[in-house]
Length: 93
Image 1 (cartoon, helix red, strand yellow):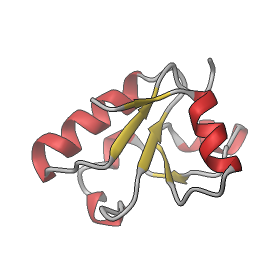
Image 2 (spheres, one colour; image 1 turned 90 degrees about the vertical axis):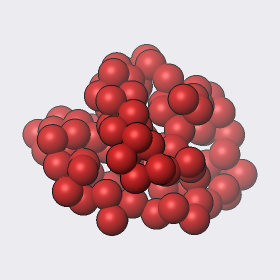
Image 3 (cartoon, rainbow, N blue to C red; image 1 turned 180 degrees about the horizontal axis):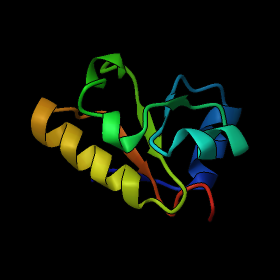
Image 4 (cartoon, helix red, strand yellow; image 1 turned 180 degrees about the vertical axis):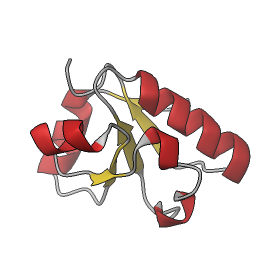
């Protein structure tokens, strides 16, 4: 599984890299603190996979990095995504 650190993400965003940020937390968590990602909670990820781009890097994140790993494993296994990056340690790091 491809990983990206919060520092690497910050560098890419600062450099203007075209990224898609995908938040797999719950809606109440997203409302409380949002780094600009599109919300698709983990329990909806398989139904909404068509909303995730395949033509640019997608950084998948959650609070600690566990739900995002699960989401990536499911998406890669079922749909063959190759452009997903787990935010190592999540946003709480």
